[in-house]
Amino acid sequence: MPGIPRLSLVEGSFEELAGELATYLDSVKGEGSNVAGDISPHLQSAEKQEEGQQTDKDAVLKKLVTASSVLNSAPERELQAAYNLLIHLISQSQDPENYLPPVCRYLSSPITSSPHNGTGIALGILGTIFNAVQPDDETRYFVLLSIVSVIRNSGNYDTLRPQLKNLDGWLQEWELEDDQKRKLYLAVSDAAAATNEADDSYLYLIKALRTLQSDPSSAEARELSIRALKAAVQIEKHFDFEDLTALDSIQALRKSDQTWSEILELFSSESYEDFQDFKESNPSFCSDNGLNEDILDRKMRLLTLASLAAQASSTRTLPYSAIARALNIASEDVEIWVIDTIRSGLVEGKLSQQKQEFLIHRSTYRVFGENQWREVASRLETWKGSLVNVLAVIRSQKEEFVREKEVELNGSGIQSGQGYRPDRRQRNAAPAVEVE
Image 1: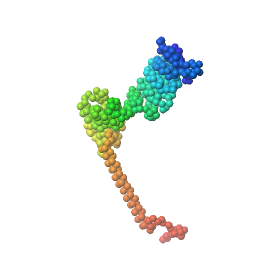
Image 2: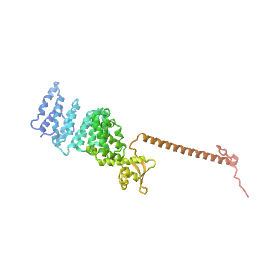
Image 3: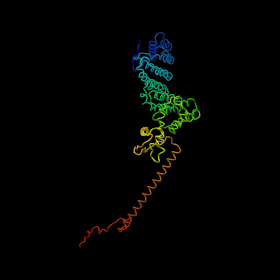
């Protein structure tokens, strides 16, 4: 089987190189393939080019790109060189963006000739294409989609993670429509989910959902809203649900999916006991929707304890008995749950075994609404009053100090505000000596 030289610089005319690639594709496809014959009517010899006849490059590239789907079964040692040659030929077209997307799709598919090294080969070729395209060219979008697809299928998300800091800038530079942005965000979310990177998966799912806020009641918006809500309640360290409640598509669930809307309300502001009541009223909801009931129970206990701590902000203490009752746990388990809540970052404090109390240093509000703003205003007013009192004390002490100083100076025969300046003769005279 003829091979293609592994060259970083490809030499030769378009006609010569196209003929070589076509011959190679025929050899890979086997008997019955006639790519070389199909493109030969469109190739012009050097003599005909001198006469003004030009090769129809687009017609040649269409046939070469279509036939190149077979390259994924080419021998590993020849695969990258063959793709590089194809990319070189495409780069000579006036409209390379017409041919690169199909090539990217081929590279997104499994490379059957190299099960072990196929992912690295595909990513290397796709990286070459991405870097060869102008930064503001929308073609990069299709290349990146293919890169994310390969990473998702290979479970190699760590390869993609360092580049994601550039993603929003790229999307802005490419001036994409919302549906294109959404497709890429969802692809990244799926790639992260494939490697159990739940936080990253949720982050890009929310980004995708935000592209649908112009039509929050659409079927797609509803589907993604439920998917995001389902993810949010099951991510171990996700406790802030305001990113969801701020979305119009989530608010639209109040009409289309009241049960899901109730779930959001429970995790946003309600207690563990309320969640148990919900499960009694909807016994099959969790199992029907693939929700892990144990994870939800644990999360609701942590959130309930955070709410108890916030409500006890005036006394700064929580009795063990109140915690055990609210979380429906045994008294001996209270300290374990408090420690877990501290580790989750929801509260800070110290346990007092002697007093059977949790001493609260800091607590997190689950919902920051009108009541919380009112409380902040009250605390600021109290703080302001304290500062006024401190200033009054300082002013009083300062005035007292000035009065005492004046009395001291007047008692010495020195007028306030005037320095003591002895007569010149007194300065030069010898000091008086008393003799008994």
